[in-house]
Length: 168
Image 1 (cartoon, rainbow, N blue to C red):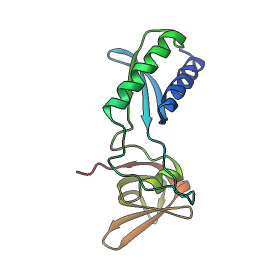
Image 2: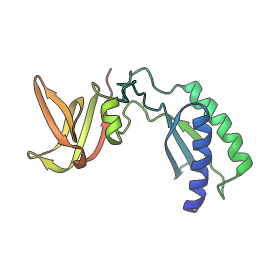
Image 3: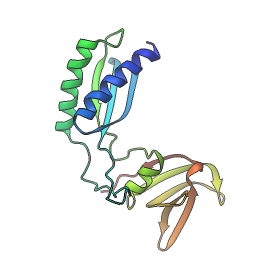
Image 4: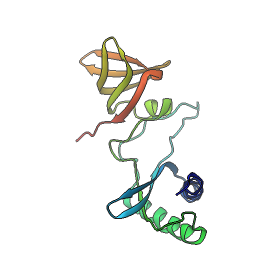
């Protein structure tokens, strides 16, 4: 399996996903117990206000099963015709999930108000792991409410990984 083959599959997936007004979050090709799996992860694009500021997402604005099925059906047909991969695989289309990774400044604004787990690549005031309610961004700092009235600032450049935490 070459990187070129995966890039061709990614380009085809992106074309199909965009035709539904959605965005391609990730494409992975992995060997699993059932064989090769081409995992296509789709999401809704961020919404922007008239002033160009990213709008905070509603928790119910995620991707549904019906959308995954539509993309899977159409993408499966395109992949059958274009045949970008040199071996057999199973196509799986899904959403990033409730515990989705946060990628870049837009996500930190988009998911403000949600619970988050964040790991800094270097300690900030002696701490590397943070959990709390995402307060968005202030300049180049991610704001995390870690308790009543307590807020931590983590420079965006030091965020090693971050993901939403599931709320029930």
